Length: 181
Image (cartoon, rainbow, N blue to C red):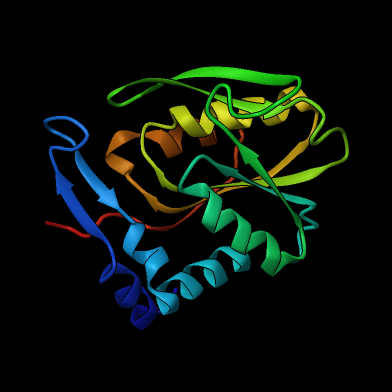
């Protein structure tokens, strides 16, 4: 991402201290989606990471992965799939519980939404410990689809998620890390 574009995007990110619990500095990217220019910059930059790689579908992780993923799918001419919290998807689902830096959660994916030969990217806003993303990658594998990459707007490298995922063979592309200080 060009320095001017990065500055536009960073100007839309706010850090919320001690949320959702004490000691956590939450990187709130809601402002990026609310600003048309910043949102376009991010979607275009994500698309450049996987353009020409034959992506069939983009999977967005609930909830902040939805707007980024849907816009990216449109940009790539690919389908869009939601990966949801428990009880939100009708029919047969694969489920995976995982640990967060401040608790645990579960993700679900329809069992028949992707399969062998299907090339997918997973999109979320922030990569922290890798728990959520790791569960998402596991669900795609359970369906037999091929992971092209995990795309995130921001990586929090001090939490180690990227190294955990890359050690498992997942290609990870992040546009930003938190600003120093």
